[in-house]
Length: 187
Image (cartoon, rainbow, N blue to C red; front, side, top):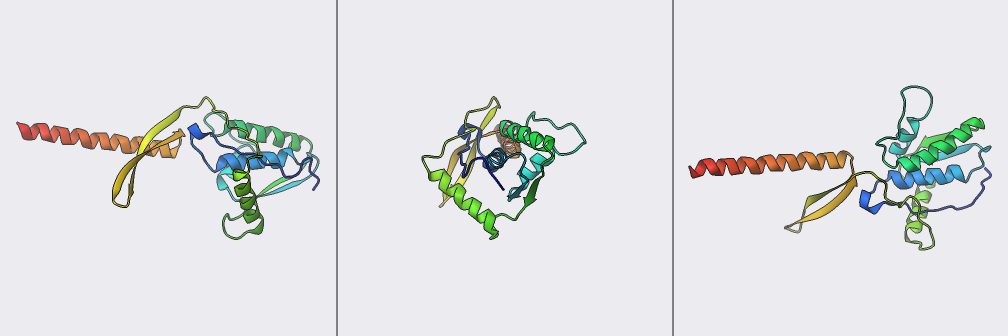
């Protein structure tokens, strides 16, 4: 495989929007696409099922896919743009799922390179600017060594935020019920 640039790395993180493993996985996929000549076939071994699902929505015919509400839509849009160019050039692009953290040599090597890039001050940042998506903040109860503390968590809307909203609503109902029972007990 001939590539345009060798050993491309970047840091990806939007602190205030929360983090997901999809951000760096999508960025790595983008770098692999961008840095491979569009006339060259590409085989990508991927340990992230969510990445494969996100990309799969854009393959073939079927329902209308949209980036509205997609986490990391800007990175995914850049990936789709390159994939369309590769399709127009009739170039094969294969994404193969490998089990992550199970001793797959290529996957373990990628994890090692990612860990090194995180601590390398020379590695630049991409996709770190905040998007216009709403950011939710909630306090999560943490019990450690017999002590109870609360930690602030931040994220754009996802299942974790939805669960926090439901938990908060349930806690409010419990508090309101306790107040109602207390008022009844005072009578």
